[in-house]
Length: 328
Image (tube, rainbow, N blue to C red; front, side, top):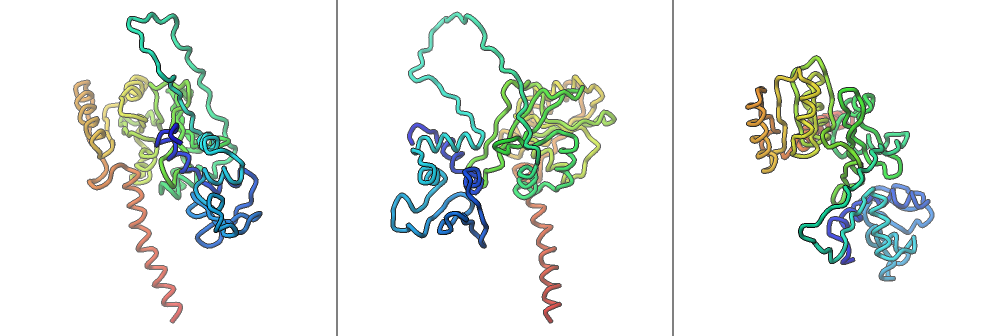
């Protein structure tokens, strides 16, 4: 276990255990607040992340645990093998560093590392997991989700059901793509860029008739902003980072832009980047505005989720009041 970094173990333990069991060929059934397996009905899966087998409750090491224990007991894997399998299932790719690497001074590099070919992940053919995650976990409305699906800017990848966010150039050719896992209810989320992409581009939504560009850190914040503000008119761009390389490219390809609105996060890196970017682009002749989410919210998605929660409370009270009236 010591060979895995904390982040890798967190990813392995964030995988949806029900999805893992289904992939292995088991039939999952929901019973109240937990899940069970048709083929072994003494098993209980709680919070989709850990399990317990009542028929062997006194057999330590065989009666429950995490996703890693599930693979060990039911797939016959060693702990190390199970962790690697779960990382692979989550779409995580480990970058190995050679041990005892020697750094040579004044070393002459014989040749540059060959650039990887940019190939988009194969589509799943359905967007079920994508829609469920963005709607249920991120509170983004189905109207907004459908908008981006129909524009072919997002889709669900085959295999691990990762969401793929595409960054197109002015001609509509995809130059950049990032992936975001949907099984992160417990632990850290899986995120990565597709190998070989051009980081001068970012996830974007273009309107050539608008001279306004709204800038975000992430694609999910961009979608959340659209849901909150119903803004289908402006151009929108997610940097995917705090570097402005995608912004520079977008402005070069869309010279009609006059106004830049920075909707970066409310944390320290986001506030620092907003000040620096506004100063830079103001000096470059653009009108600039700082438009972070309200105080108390880290980003636009956190704001959206809080807004949806506040909207649900009156609706739930109305339903309860109606039911109470019918009971009388």
